[in-house]
Image (cartoon, rainbow, N blue to C red; front, top):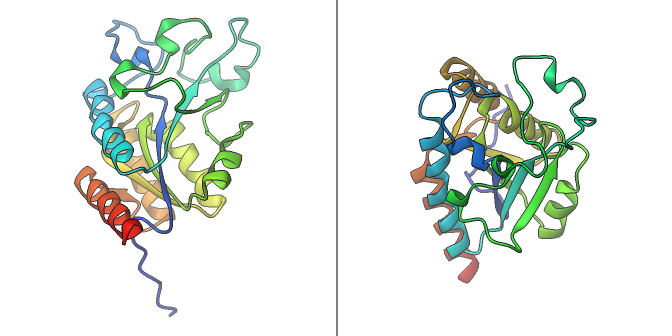
Length: 208
């Protein structure tokens, strides 16, 4: 049996990937267009700790925004499942949430599909920033986070998901997605505390 190399939480250069933390996540609705597990908004808000820490340590922060044209021409098969119409252009709920501390001039990738890699210039940006490790937070754990993780994995990035800062459509789907990601990369499920510590170690190493 070949002994596997134990990977560090951060290999090479990291970037924090903030997946679809948009204003609608913080709007309470009786019948949301996308189902959300209990505590969804609180988990999205907790990502602010990561974002602020990454900024302070000069770790690139990349915001991902799902957005669809108002005539819905680019939804494709996305409405064939449980999800209803969502994230239309010019809808205030589609904007990156103020709770993230998003600033004009921040890196922003707009996408029409679930994965941040699909049909975008995300990988061009990652290559330009010389990123090796993707630190993922946001939603949904079982959809956009999972699909972005998988495409990152298949593109040979080290992928980590911050458990306290992701949330799924249901608690069961959230947990299943975390297990599926851990299956692909052992150690990919990380605590907020451990990710913050790893970013600080990375920053200190850079200064040394």
